[in-house]
Amino acid sequence: MSESCSRPLRRLMDTLAALEAHPAGLSARQLAEITGYPQGLILQDLNDCLLDTDLAGYFPLYVGEDDPINDSMQIQDPDVRWFLQPNTSMQQPAWQLAPEEALALAWMMQQYRPGGELEQLGRTILAGCGAGQQAAAAREGDAMPVLRGGVQLQGGEIWEKARRALLEEKKIVVSYYARNLQQVVEWLLWPLCLVFFTGNAAWYLIARREDTAEIVACHLNRVRRLQVSERSFVYPADFSLEGYLRLRWGMDLSLPETVRVHFYNEAGVWEKVRREFARRRMGGLREVSDDVLEYYGPVHGVNNFARWVLSFGSSAVVLEPQWLREKMLQTARYWLEMYGEAADEGKNKQVKFW
Image (cartoon, helix red, strand yellow):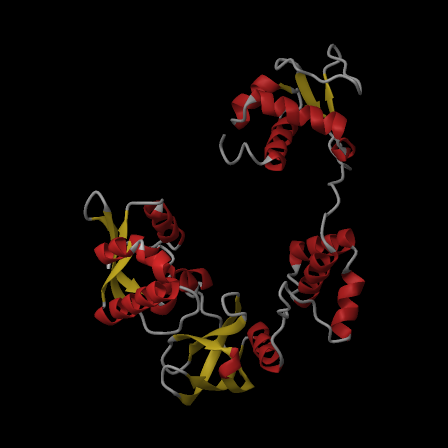
C-alpha cells in the first residue's frame, strides 16, 4: 500500500475535494479514478465520515435519493453517487492542539505579525485555539513559552537586539569571538535572519559583513556585544536562507573542505545517501562499481558531515582528506575498544572497509 493510502485524513480530504469540485456527485468508482485511491478505502472513508464520526457536522455528505442510508446501514455499492452539500457557511473542524502548542502558536503570531491576509488568518487561529490572552499574559510577565526539553523561544538580550535590527533593517556592530580565528573581532553586519539549531539548542545570527559581503553565521553565545546603529540597509534580494543552509551539515562554521567518501551498497545505505543529497540538491554522487557509490566534492561543515558518515558504520569510508580519514579511524578504533569482544566479532569487516 502506498504511503498516501496509509494516511486516512489526507485520503479523506482528497476525496472531499473531488466531491466539492463535482456538484453533480461522484461514485466511489469515479472517485477512485480521480484520486488514485482504491474504491474500497474510499467507501470506508465516506461511510465512516457519514456515520461513525463527528465530521458529518462539518462536511455534509449525502447519497442520491434512490440510495437511502440510515444509522445502521453502510453503502457498499461502488456505483452509488455521493454528494457534498454546498454550504458557504460550512465550518472547519476545531483545532486539536495541546495547551502548550496553542500557547506557543499564539505567541509566535503576536510576536511576528505577518500583515495582509495572513494577519486575518492569524486572528482566526488565535480565536480558534483560545490561547491569545494566555500568550499576552506570558509576554507581559516575561514567561515566554518553551519548546520541549526546556528550550526557550527567545534567546535573551542579544537575541532581542538582533531581532529588532532584523525587523527594522538596521545595521549592527558586533564584538564576536570567532573560534576559527581564536580572537574577538568587530564586524559591521547586515542582519539577515535568526536561526535556532536543534543540534545544540543554540541561536545563530546569519548576517552579511559590510566590508567583504561575506555571509557569516554567528553563534549568539559568542557575541560579546551587539549595538544596533541608526543606519539602514536594503535586504539583499539575492540572499536565500534555504540556499545558504541546504549545503551545510548542521551549523558547523568551518571553511568548506573537499572530501572523497565511498558508500557501500548494503542495508539501504545508497537509498539514504541519495535521499539526503537530493534533499540538499547536491550533485557529485556517482557509482564507481556495482558496490560503491562515491561522493567527491566540497562539504560545508565537515565535522557534522563526518558524524553523519559515521552513522553508516562500516558501510561508509572516508578516503580524503587524510586528516579526516585518520580522525575517522581513531573513532572506529575507540568503538572497538569500547565494545570489546562484541565489536571484535565484526573486526574483519571493519578492516575491509577502513
